[in-house]
Image 1 (cartoon, rainbow, N blue to C red):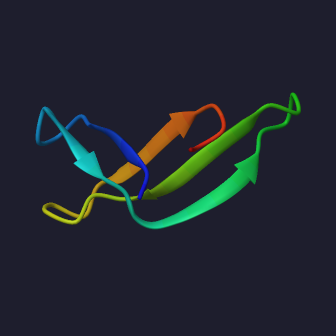
Image 2: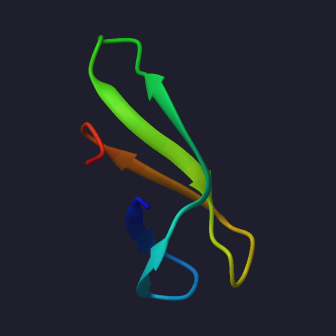
Length: 48
């Protein structure tokens, strides 16, 4: 499962409903929501 930093919780969290996306400049990214507070989490780079 991918992890990212939630700005609202100020902690590293697992990304719920993670989706692999490609940004406008062609770089890979992961987008999803925080399982605790529901805030959108966005992580640049390919997920492992």
